[in-house]
Image (cartoon, rainbow, N blue to C red; front, side):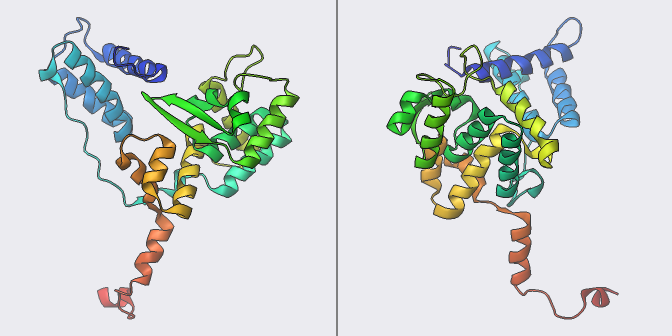
Length: 272
């Protein structure tokens, strides 16, 4: 809180610390050996990236408690040169989700998914999409200690203002509950998951942040401007944005095939 982290970040750190607390022995003794064992248990259960995220929270706690000698190294992860197609949402799948939302009569989700995907905002930032911001064509987003401006495409701006008019939303956030509060990210996640079966899209690909990814991949494919993309996404480090320069596995294979470094002779025959 003193570092002014976001509410979501604080909640995540609390969950991670609670997980560590439950792992400790009954007397809650903390030693380097116990923390190492905890790290191993995480790596056996979670992906390395998720385990590292949890260990970051634990290491921060240990430093705060004056137990820096108990901190552990994060798991090294070799950078991949291509994206895993299995988890990337395609434009076709995105459009299928939109069509399914309309067929289900969920215009709120229909408009929200387009807003995230057309602007690249984080799901927690939808609260800054207000009627006032829409009228001026842009919004100031406050997140992670930074302020950045996002621009609404003209077509989206027009559609959202019409949506707000039909919902009798004359001011404040466009996406609210029946009580007038901004939608919670868990509710948005749940609504999107319900679309999967009807839309015929793999549920592993369907979550709000993947809409932001689709925006970023599409923007970079057109503009090839990494610095501008980092500004739009609100990244502090361009290294975070560099993930969107990676091509998909299929394209990477095509490039290797076109290099012409293999003999025309049958390789199987050569090996035998």
